[in-house]
Image (cartoon, rainbow, N blue to C red; front, side):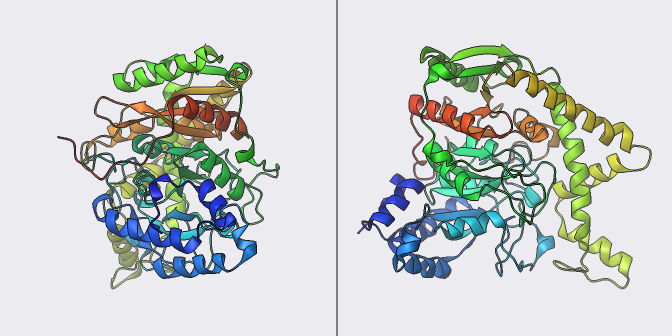
Length: 489
């Protein structure tokens, strides 16, 4: 039986596998065939687990217990900064060659316990540092809607794999927008949970106070389903929250009349692509017509968010990446002395963007500058948290554009780091404040490229943002996978 993967969702696949009218083996075979046919053009994957995936699928088909689980037979891709025991993990960097971790990330273990099939690892900006997936040491990923354009980053491989129809879902990580920004550029749903909602155990660290794992999917229901599976406290991550995890996917329907939406007017001002402004204002008007209340709000300190983010994130990156020295594991360069080995290993193993961020982070932590930069950035972070707290006293969610532009051309911003950093201008605030955020497709620009709408909620407010995203999906319709790879004229 031929399977049309483009029409399959995670929830739908699991229901059909449980009912016996679709086998996990059929789904996995179709997935592997689709990846083989399409990934040469898109470049989403760094590794594909064909043999293991087929074995896993057969076990699911032969086990009534496994077939009854919430993600039974669903192929899911993993961003390659998530550890899988015995499987190479690169984080998109040469410096981790040929590292294979001895353990599996908690979020990945929970996917497998729910019946999912790990189909492979996806490409990313090196150590998740980037907004275009052009910084990978191994390949460049293209946007399935137009292969001359970037898919966003750093979870660009995961977003492209979902958008192209190769998989219905993938995991990514979001440090300053690295799930939501590529989701917007590729026309998929991307969810960043509340900090601490999902365990970071087994995630290769970039900035530990900002990183969070989350799903990229084609529907809001699938994002909610995967969050229900991977969320929850974990003894291996002391920052995880003890709060109970709702069955998010069973609580998505709501009435727009019960929703109060805060709209930061500054987000719809100068610097926003006119096509994005048109689509965002259009969906806001539709929500208001459906009964939602729109209220203009101010986030007085959000103009400092990008600068604050890049001080804090780079400082934490400098600390986290100090462990890659060529001594304990990973890439090691030859040298006649220890100091030379350190220097050659880090010079040859890290790419230019990672080196830039390590240098910036080391500088802001250095003697005489820590208080002036890092300390002040932490104070501004507190002000941003307070801004959101005041806003959520009056509104249920904050809504605006996910990105200032749609997918830009490959190479367009590669030589302008500041311009690249501004791609995250609307997303970094949620990470700094530890809040949940979701990007949901809401339209297209005049070139047919996807536009994303961002919805941010209060801490542990995933139910609120998922319900709001579901309303948008009902108004605008879920995006179908991208057509066969094309290039704009």
